[in-house]
Image (cartoon, rainbow, N blue to C red; front, side, top):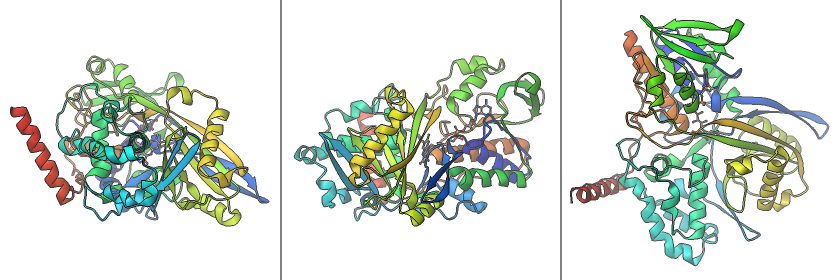
Length: 500
Ligand SMILES: Cc1cc2nc3c(=O)[nH]c(=O)nc-3n(C[C@H](O)[C@H](O)[C@H](O)COP(=O)(O)OP(=O)(O)OC[C@H]3O[C@@H](n4cnc5c(N)ncnc54)[C@H](O)[C@@H]3O)c2cc1C
């Protein structure tokens, strides 16, 4: 196993549970990759010392995350997750800030999918966010979004070329465009011009378009390291697996019995041989390792590799809590932050601090553009604090502590691409299987669930080769009947148009 993010840990656990005794190598001193925990932040306030554990970024587990939920449930991990109840849409324009709660209207809509967004129009606060031009432009926006019913980029080979989402949004009314693009940035961590159209359609289908309950999600009750990664690692070792952190794989070499993996350098150089290797790296790390290995370099040079995205995460501690009851929000318009999460609403340490002091902790994510992320820490903090305080004027003058974390460019720019030039669970090299949230596999999931699904599938492939019992991937719940009917009809239209 090379790589100890969620994909690698899931694969290692599946291998260990089947009795294969995997060895997992992770480059970082800390396991978890993008789901890793972080350093502890200490704070003196109200005559007491408080400690908060940071992380790569707050994560949610969405309704269709069946494989991740099943893996956690099998080992009694993070059972006390906190369901998301309310998510705000905050829009800043011309010195004004508008806010409406939108999340619950979608997942608890009275209308069946894919008409469930009509629930938003029954909310006066949401309607107040729109202009007359938005209401007139609604059919056009709905028509473009329903493209996601006609095309399933993760399950069928469709060549969208280099098309980004920006073209889809052309001509949309301003506020609706701001809303959908904020939703997309929050989910895909990139701007419309950077997001491949195929990735956006896959995102819409998996998270919201086909079922109301796929937008229902849970928060972890503690930082992701403590809540998920540490217990997963403990389960792997309890089942006979071994883990080496701080072990950067530098080369894979074909041997008569499988592969030799080299890691470390100089005095600290090591190697181990295995009949089966699972690569569980982020896309750019996989490209580097395979390009540096003579037995894989030629084929790797001909493959396409998703770009890695940098992210910035600002945390702000306030002496009082905001008036809004939403746990999180997405942002649009003249704002730097893309989304935010009030940690006292779902994380134990922040909730304890809130109960004792009345204070609040917010985590805000900044997904670019690069020129914003290039700014010094103090500037990012100032922008994030200004955004939060514009949305919540009651928090002005209440900021008592702040941190910023810069995540390396390992986050997947999700393009839903497949084909022979894209790495899949079944790699082009014998006895190497791959997993990760960017790895091709015929399942509609994205991000954490995709990491988990491909982890299970890669382990199943390796176990099959070893003659051991293999776990099965749990399928996604099918679309609601109306969505399924419309999907069939639109695909029929597509087929007819193609024939003509
Ligand atoms: C800020 C942020 C918020 C997010 N929020 C959500 C969310 O709410 N819900 C959701 O579903 N997803 C979310 N995601 C995405 C989610 O974190 C990822 O989809 C998932 O963690 C990917 O797991 P992975 O194992 O595929 O990759 P990674 O976590 O990137 O793991 C790859 C691992 O390989 C290791 N590695 C690299 N090179 C080597 C080498 N040469 N040798 C050994 N090891 C190596 C890396 O150190 C890393 O640990 C978020 C991501 C970010 C950045």
